[in-house]
Image (tube, rainbow over all chains, first blue to last red; front, top):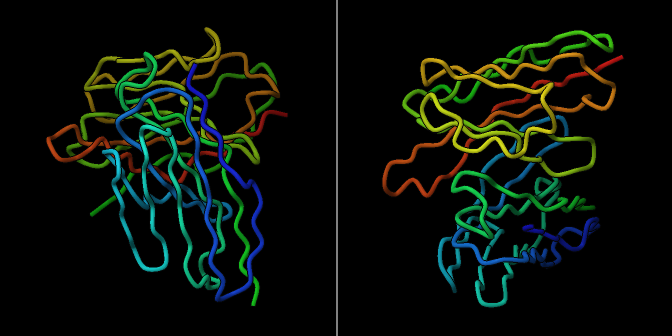
Length: 115
Length: 116
């Protein structure tokens, strides 16, 4: 059974600081997704990572994928308050017998950015 | 353009009742997904449609849960004999399986189901 684990689960940061959220998964997959969720809202797609070594950046967020280590990271640079949200990684693709469409999500990382 | 829509946004029901939750995907998206999200957890896969057929229903917890997509567009998730443990936010997502889409799933706002 595919397992996806994120750490940390809770992250309190000061504005202007850098930090990284880690996402480990247990079986081979060819695609990794990052989503953002604001309180009481639905999920917003941030990044789709499709190959080993893939790196994508949008504003203060940068995501990377190491398929050999089964690890993805979401790096936050010079955090601002607007980044406060819950961040989920999700693994899809033909992983461990799961169907093409199914996404398996991590537990989520609750990020709070303080002034 | 219009995103994924779900109705109702909130549904309160009594234990043992039947409920239907509706999802309207992004126009032209062939794949549709249902997930369930409990408080403080990540979404949990329930079922996935490709066109009208269920391609994977391995996440449906038991036979009280059923979903249909008769015309390959709108989908309805049906829950019979609801239990308090069914209380959660039910999320619907859709994706295009055209080349280059990478199966990126776009989520609706969810239906918050409360079973009293």
